[in-house]
Image (cartoon, rainbow, N blue to C red; front, top):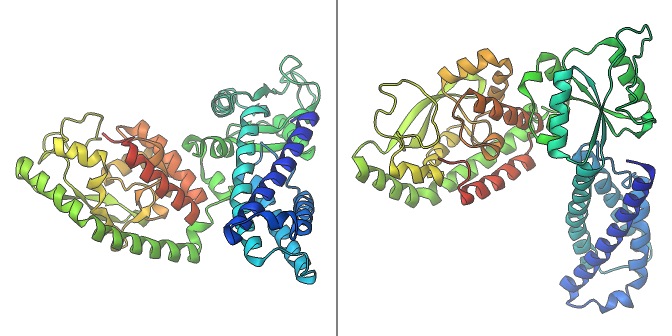
Length: 448
């Protein structure tokens, strides 16, 4: 961002922070005491002190240095840290000056509200800045740079992208800047994208020089992760897996134990609550053609171990008798009338909660695939095997972002969302996916 824009953003953040803090203090007073008038008398000094302490702590934690090129986590971490420091400092001050402090209930409620309001406000500013103000420099391979340009324009349509190419015929080690496509000042760039898996030395030298001048440098996987919330499988290899950030939760004992306990509780309650619905669906399936109500099928799970997944039958009996294993497709003629509605409402997935209880599946994770499809996809995309680092899920990031996969191209897209989930797995991310699943089921999106 240019200097005048940065100043405007800082002022807007300051004003917004102060307004939200005041509103949260007013709300805390009303919730606690059903009145706000003491804030203009008895608590006025404490209110003014808070309006001074909180912005100061935000400034000390660099919370007003919003960087649209940085990750959302980084842009939210600093204001959250500043708020925690400010709340602690205000509490300490009120402890030694009890005559001017708020009531403890008012202060606690106000801070609880302020956490939500502050993070929501900052996230909104961050998203708006990212969509409007990035100046991005592209370096690397032409095809990869074009892919990066398309992605940036899709998710940040007002951003400007420039291209830098090394001067092949020149002996100068740092290459050249194209005066027709590049701004005059190098420090005007917000972000540099190194596009491609093999970058020539002159390009790497220029990228290193710009990074030392403060320009953020991303590779293509990082760009896709931040903008599209998925990872490009074609640009993921062992080198990237070995050096990329993330993947920590996969081996954290606390995460694994918490996730398993949540799975057991949700599956147990889900099976009990959904029993009448499953009974009704079973009766409808039986009345339609007299065939089996449930079916089981071999799938590949964690550690590439196979297990049998259980679902309500939605297709005609012997659906693959003549064709063998094939992908499901939109308006698949093998799906029965009852099965169409079961799929639309995701009722056919309920018996998989039994697989969750047995420890073969989780509520959230990559969707388990059949061995024949796994073998085919793994031969084309070696990173497909990363999906088997965790238990497969009834729902997952790929399931809520994409409709059912009808071919290998669709499965490649779902793989990219699964890779993003593996890199960023957490209980909060799981909660986000579950809430998104409820919304997806309610809308009927992505079901055939």
